[in-house]
Image (cartoon, rainbow, N blue to C red; front, side, top):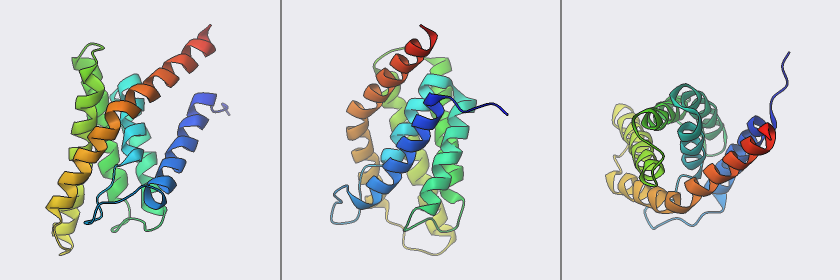
Length: 165
C-alpha cells in the first residue's frame, strides 16, 4: 500500500483547518456571507495539478464541508459542487499559460460554481434563495483569493521543488 506524500497530507490538513476556521473564525457580513477558504485550497491544487486532481481534491474538500458543522443539506451536495469547481479550475490550467490572471479567473469560476450549486439546492429544497449572500460570498472569496491562492501555489511549488531537488 503506497504511503501518502507530505504534500497530500498537508492538503488534507489545510482543507480541514479551512473548513473549521471558515465556519467559526471568519467574520461574516450581516447576511451571513463570508469568504470560502476551502475553495481557495481546491483552486490552488487544481491549478497546480489539473482537472482530474482538482475534481478529486474538490470532492474530498466538499465531504469535509458537508461533515463539519453546520454541515450540508442535502448531504453530498457540497462535495459535488466542489468537485465541479475543482475540475473547472484544473481545466483552466490546460487552456492558459502561467499568467497572474489564471488563479484569479479560476477562483471566480470556482466560487460561482459552488454558490450556484448552493442556489440550485436551495431552490430544489424550497429553502429561501439568498442570491445577495451568494454574490457577496463570490466577491469575498475572490478578494481573499487574490492573495491566498498565489501564496498556496508558491508553497506547493516550493514543496515540489524540495521533493525533486
